[in-house]
Image (cartoon, rainbow, N blue to C red):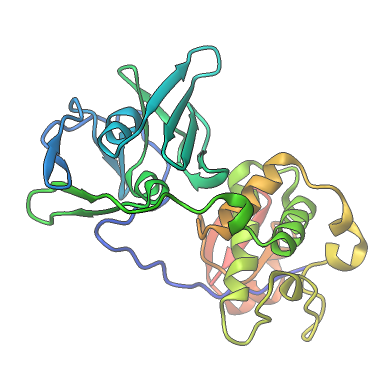
Amino acid sequence: MAKRVLISLLVLSLFVCTAGAAPPDTLPSDAVEVYVSGEPVNMEGLTVSENGVIWVPLRLLSDALGAESVKWDGKTSTATVAAPGLTVEAVAGKVYFTANDRYFYAPGGVKLLHGRTLVPLEALCRAFGASCTVDERSGAISVAPGKEPITPGDNFYNAEDLYWLSRIIQAEAGGEPFVGKLAVGNVVIERSRTPGFPDTVKDVIFDRRYGVQFTPAYSGGIYNTPSEESVIAAKLALEGEFVVHALYFASQRAAKNCWAARNCQVVADLWGHVFFA
């Protein structure tokens, strides 16, 4: 069933990281200076910037922000940070990392560079409750520590939203790669935040004022148990992590003749679905 798409502009600030695939020839830049509370931090020349996302060594910045320990498990390629009130876990190659059981997008996958685990700067700062800015002229990064780390997942994710969002993702994109799953979740979240649509995840999914919007909601597919990956995609969408900003989408087969194809512009073609603006 076609879903109409209305793009929402993705507004970037200078210091907020965005999604993007990692090119294979990324080079570190030792010219980028990093300061925490005004004091320089040695990043060993491993700060990386690509597609608007700044990546930093997990251990080095975590230590500067007061981590009690940083451990590496070579068998699972997992780095684990322990800090007061905070546990961060990053697995090399995964397109997300966790902090207090909350999920953060790592476009292209958590990196290993010269023996260091790299994660997106802005997301790691959020985990520690810190803020980060980048100087326009010099490119220097300034990090201001916060008072409290990020709220744990059990207290952040709305149980009903997570229940329905993970199930519609599974029903619509269960066989697609992770990015395709996240994109479906993005559409539901975008609708819930847009005037003219219902303002809860459940109501968006079951909305039929202009006809059935999500076929699985009425065919029964939505009641299937979601995979772990669908649940993680739902959590990332609830965190506000976007790979596409759209309000409607259609399967590739239906996209050729659907309402959105006749009235909207294609903004993304992700695996099994076409998204329109």
